[in-house]
Image (cartoon, rainbow, N blue to C red; front, side):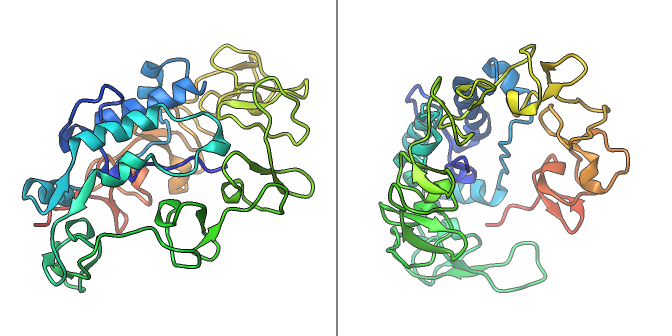
Length: 331
């Protein structure tokens, strides 16, 4: 099942839960803290300190143009909503069937201030969030804002790109890229995120149904909670953490695979170590199988100019035409 990702991370900041107002520049550390609080609460890491050092699946790409636009007042940033956004995120339920869209506070973290026809470089500057930028040879091309009305949830059948794009009671069907009503309990499904909140897609044949919680029988080999799996006794149990016994990777947290030499869940490979399964433990690292290496090892993300084919391979979070690069701030 998809995990909700993730509050439009490039546009959200927060304090992880104490309610104070923060600046946009505080975003990265606070977003990481909130994510780790959630993953640790749900049992995927033993503690938040270990999570913070790990390749935990959260990739924050800083946008210099957005920072510049906020500083110039072309994008309004609400530090109180930012704090509430991440506080809500870290406190979300571990029940995957209840997690559908970003917390409500996250929708109001940023807002464009430029009206229809105004000059823009990025969509976030526009009240409508749509900037029509023509092709040009320059690093930063200027465009114009299309429309002067802030986005509103789209009705059933309208085009969408995220579940947040749709009215309450609908989800974004990625196969058709349109808003569609949640599928009712007992009806056929192919994706748990299409089911009415509180239900997941499971069984034979697949239908929207209640998924079992901790200790409950799991005849469909599926459990409701993040950080749990259907154990050998046929009930939902917690994923294993370092030094817990295991028979296979399915017994362990996804971040601590089963070491078949010790039959214990263990930390994945670090920099310089082989990564035959394509995963590395340390933050800001990747497995060189992504670059086609025949003997892949874990490598640190590259500085500007390093070879890349994906954003996670670059410290900047940007891979442009095969090379890591830090984009210029457009104003």
